[in-house]
Length: 572
Image 1 (cartoon, helix red, strand yellow):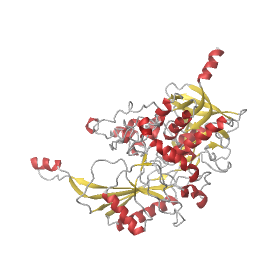
Image 2 (cartoon, rainbow, N blue to C red):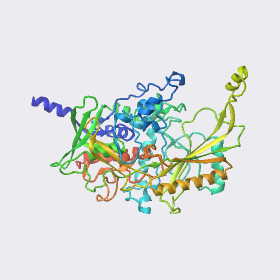
Image 3 (spheres, rainbow, N blue to C red):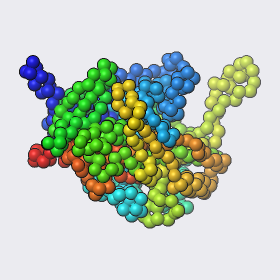
Image 4 (cartoon, helix red, strand yellow):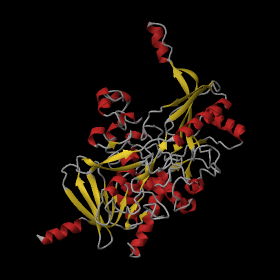
């Protein structure tokens, strides 16, 4: 019998374990296997294979039972996820349903999740901007959080590395607050978006640029993208269904199959991670305890190095639940900050207007991207009564309508003829929230989930800084719209909207220079448990205003390179 037990342990032992298969987990799998590491990837959800498991990707609107809309009964049963803009009939199968994965809202928080191989990389908005030196220097300058242990110069080569593989479209705009990258050709702005940029250049002397968004779409693939089996984006803008062409970057289309082809990756879906195992004699983690999602049987896997990429809040949960005599409050939690200083992006408000120019012009086709207003407040110095700043999306398109007057043949003909109205313009805020100790997650002491794991208790809310920032966004964008000659300008704040719908939750396992005030060092390595790395949103010390996924990719590739070098040097 012991012979079989030894074989069983051997079969469950790898060089590396990656927890999670989303954007950062996929990159960890690619990098570790690419460096020769036998790597186990654990995913708590079902397997979703590229193309095969995109059941709606080629459907026409009339082929859906409810024309793409969700039935009222489904919405009533899922009030949280139903608030997400993409939870519709064509993509609902990629979202977690409310009752299946319970959590505790100490304060209202809409936790949007995608539990499957690929995670939320199937659902993301694909915006990919680099951080600037000002973003990494921000906490030290403003004193609202601990200093980042890295600078822009540390991560810039890794931004280039992941951009070339993922495929990022954009313009080289030469902006200090938004560094250029390794870009594929950009999408084109509409005439009104270009006009708005020209007006802002005239009125603000270049301080408020309006650029085309930088996004993870293959506008002109390079050989490395064809080698992944991906093809040029078809501009269908049906991305949330899963793209059979691999036109946008996802773990499913890119990093996971790339790691699979190395022959070094073992993928186990339906594997809910309970905790990380810690050996006090060895002074390091030895493996991971997993609950089978279907049978609920427990099994343990072992490895020399562990990457935790379960998505920010679940990574917090796993570390909090990894208790031992050495770490009674969670793995690596000597500082006591695990679960604290959670932050997010503020997408709570927007502004709209109309423009009566360019009435002889409209747009053709669909563009899976929009224009973007990089942060222009408090970039180089503190100039407002709130900390940090905001970026904003911007888009312009022609309004259309049908003449519904008349009867009979005239009415039928009128309905068939699309008429064009004014241009509709709109912008939404992308505000940086401040990491605070009072914004935290913790394990509930009573409630468990269906797999016997303590439920996560979330206590996160807006603060006065967010309210001041929203007020400034309304004032500044109203001024900008007015200067551009836009009319019918309306602001649209939703004061009672809960955080979470931005799906940019970050922090709780923050990086930092001092082990007394942070969890991770400059290589995303737990200060107190050197063979465990965290490179998803949980590692973020602050949030900046840019979409965070590109930074997760770069941090992951950098940390994997460091981990393998440390393993070879026998330092782990």
